Length: 357
Image 1 (cartoon, rainbow, N blue to C red):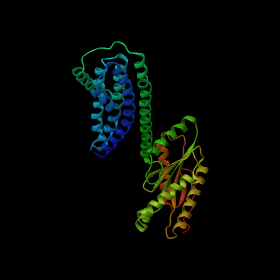
Image 2 (cartoon, one colour; image 1 turned 90 degrees about the vertical axis):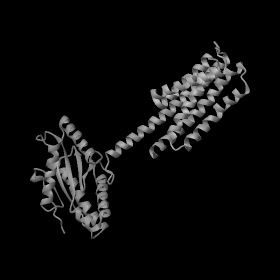
Image 3 (cartoon, rainbow, N blue to C red; image 1 turned 30 degrees about the horizontal axis):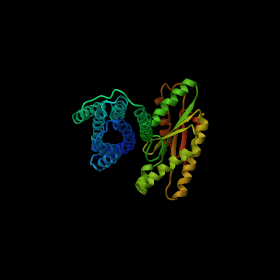
Image 4 (cartoon, one colour; image 1 turned 135 degrees about the vertical axis):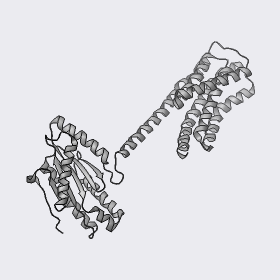
């Protein structure tokens, strides 16, 4: 209910602008067509009310309703009904009548598509019938030069205004879509890529490397004894540690590197076009800086990282095999003492740093 209310208020605000401009321009068009017919005073009063007062009444009516969206739908049908009424009152003067009908139809299509076009057309026909009952059926076959010029603002300015409103709406929707897409691919705590988004990037990087004949490395990073941190210092402290690591990843990696939160206390990094030895050096610097940062912020809180690295090689027929090698290296780092960087299947490139404490 709350969401529909917000949607209705947004629609009411958009229509308030277009209705105020459209009916003011329509008043000029209809008045020029009605003047030679010498209508009674009540017709002029109704014309002024419809052109100058009704937009404000319609907006207040919509915004004060429990469901503004439904109120605006009724307002649009009233607009269409009055449009048909004025066509009959103008005795079907060709240009003013065509301008009135086409502007109403364009507005209905822009707001509700074919369904609302049909509903608006029915309301116009009803208004036309009421107008024919009140005014003697007649037809003015020619449009005067004055009526022509009076119709031009409605024909030129209103489509421009309606197009601008539709453009702004499409731009806003596109922006919201991009924001939602970014949120769906981002881990809310760390701001890094989430598990699914990172694996999508891994597949893309794997295909690029195979296609271009280039190499690269991936790293899986695990915070040592993270459960003990949560149990001893609380989950708030654990979240701080996770955010610290994500911040350090952004600060220490290259622009082309892609970091993500793989899950829980495990992070992942794609290091494109980087030899394994250089990747290991970069990860060891990260490991060392993270351990020192933990000691500086809270002397009693000991933090360290276990990191597994794997370089892309010809035996990897898909990205999962590449990832599995990094996972095996991470497992070895955790089972052989933690606080170290280990490279998959290359003991000569093994980087180890035992916890000095």
